Amino acid sequence: MRIDIWTDIVCPYCYLGRRRFEEALERFEHRDEVEVQWHSFELDRTADPVSEHDLPGLIAAKYGTSRKEAVAQHEGLAAQAAEVGLELNWQAARSGNTFDAHRLVHLAADVGGQALAGRTHERLLRAYFSEGRAIGDRDTLVALAAEVGLDPEAVRDVLESDDYGNHVRSDEATAKMLGITSVPFFVLDRRYGVPGAQPMEVFEQALAQAWASKDEDREPAMAAGGCGGCGPGGCGGVCSA
Image (tube, rainbow, N blue to C red; front, side):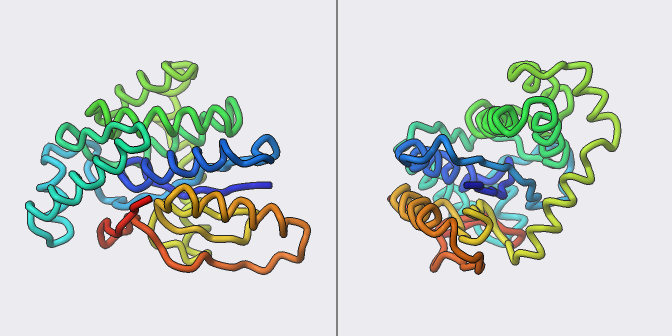
């Protein structure tokens, strides 16, 4: 069974949603027969490579909220992330353009399949959310890529070219075709849509349902209700377990 996941590297709900999904998948009895595919989604294509603004100020200015509201939202998300063993160090986050980071994930998939793509994706999320690394900076991306086993010189060559840009745009075109407007977004067995950083129990139920009906005729069906997620208009929602 295949699971397609659309995320952006600077989306806190994507980090939280990924961990909750992984915990559900770990408990799933057929987990060894599940293939996960990572897909690109840019929340802001026009962002500078690295922003010099602090994250709450950037969010408040971009989406028309107050700084106080942005701080409260990130504090709440950090608390939820801690419940699943993630450190959301939003005070140190250095936001920026994620196009090159997405290209790096596609390169990893080409080199080592979706397993390496998944490790690369996770390393980028941790670098941004926990370590304050600027994932829009190409030198940073080269260093992070080396940590997961990619050849630094090959990575630099790719980043200085247009390679894998069409992969990013293709993912985004597919998301648009499917009506995906916010991330994270999970598509199970190419027909069940699960939006947002749902509680682990929701992912468990979705996996069981998708597996039970995997041999039936495919009629796309969206999951009812969304949890927290990020879209071009901002981030929000409640993701309590």
